[in-house]
Length: 384
Picture 1 (spheres, rainbow, N blue to C red):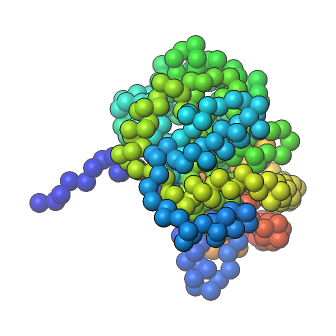
Picture 2 (picture 1 turned 180 degrees about the horizontal axis):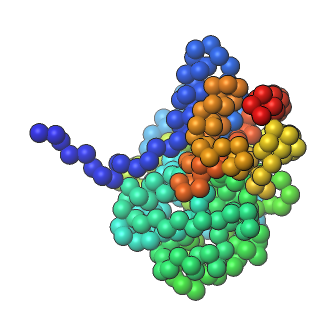
């Protein structure tokens, strides 16, 4: 007799990881790859983090910490909100997590019950949809496009009927677009008036090019704020994130964190505390992302990729490729095979319309972006 397999695990794959596996297999076979698929900084942790951890290892036991994290890191995170946004955050509301992924699991479990309806923008980060689905929470897709800068508005949200929660991301993945301060405030007010729990994904804050990102905390204490050390702080493998939790959810989040994770990785927490002292190096990373962005925005249209999202922040360019293909998955497979360029099909981010889009990540070296642009021009010239 076959044994049962739970339905909650039958969620779609994270397609970008499949693309990365194919790209790595190509590299292992001795062929070159230009990695524009994964949203991962091309640099490692800042030198100040490396130095701090080198001084720590072997001199401290690094056992379990409080479920909410070590006090010195929680204090630094609270201070960050005052420094970066002029917003006071009580250290008691800061919850350190095992990456932003751990924060999403905790927030969804604490705020929503099975059968609740949670809305999110499409295109959007696929793990929102897949984690919610695994937890038995109904996902409501908000189809957004260039007319609203790929961001949800109160009118779009109102059109989906009664919902219990809303996830917003500014800057967003995969489009890199941002909400203005006024637009974010309007969405916060919409949620407050209707009793909708807002989850604000702010993991790309710090990586912006014309206007600084605004936190939802500027307008409400009721939202769940999620951030991470993976993007701006270049610490993806350290698996460290944080939440700012509304007072009414603190105990629920604490009990869940104790049981699901015990505590975040201790060594990563000490590393995170040191990361806030590495501003010069981190700003230099953003300057490189800006150069990469400007290069691709200028060069991609020359290769036929002429419908691009605004890329206000993060390190992605979301390109409509409907004039080139109606199957972005096959298009990306051919791109990797014929040019060595790895990119992510839009179906990862938008199940309904993603076959017409491709995401390019420009988190790597500028020379890599220049070479990718040159190869794409030659490739497109050869097939047209």
